[in-house]
Image 1: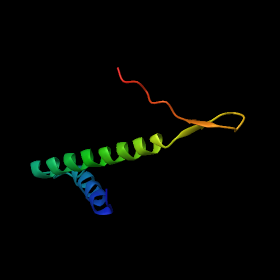
Image 2: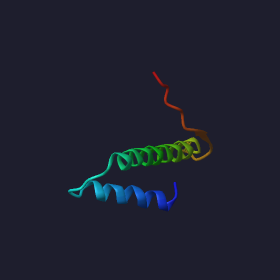
Image 3: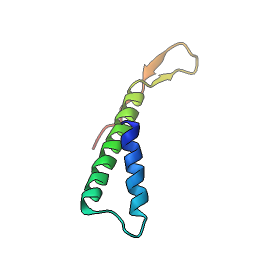
Length: 71
């Protein structure tokens, strides 16, 4: 997500706290931008966790971290 979109999220949040609030179109835009931001954060975290390894206490070897099983 680029800096322009993050700045727009912050501008909409600031405007939402003012007495005039957001228009319905702005609320829709804010929700879309927030969803995109959350997806970006989750994607980055998943990528980082996929590259995480566990090193054995003796330091001789390592293994990938286990994935949590979904219910």
